[in-house]
Length: 109
Length: 119
Image: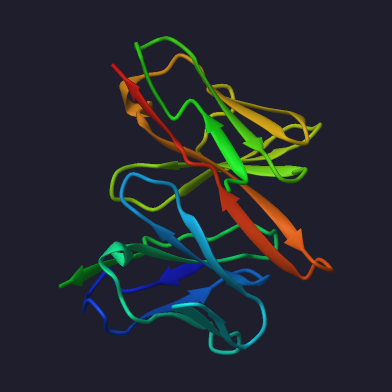
């Protein structure tokens, strides 16, 4: 079957660094997306990884290991506005996104 | 700027009426659009894949006669909730998947969503 596993909730301090892990099992694989979703809003695209390794984009970086079915999102210099849910979504062989419940990130001052 | 727009952003309707939601791809032509539904504090649920010029592909458990999808052009897909009931109240979001560069990389953009409340 297809499955996504992320922590339900994480708490971090403003200015710190946090890593949100994601493990996945899919029927085929065509890359993995990370999205940010604030409450009551649609998801916002953060990153896409299809090859192993780290992709850095400003304060956010995403890592992928296809052999391990593992990805993480790294957020640096946390700001209060980073409080949101973070969704890991692999793209399966039919080019459909597989969604988990996401990780709710709480930033404290 | 936004690459996908939705209209309306929110709508309240009475039980038994129909509601149409529009999804427009602003920056590129989209042969495929996706419609999602999200209930409070739950993950996104794919309802259907909208294919330009052909019938939509519905996910298991989604009634195609209740959720009518029309993808008449490369920039517009519509979702019509027919005979809406209170349990249809939800956040409906469309998205567009586009390939980037030589086609080995993808980006998926979401519309801002439409909040439907059926009274």
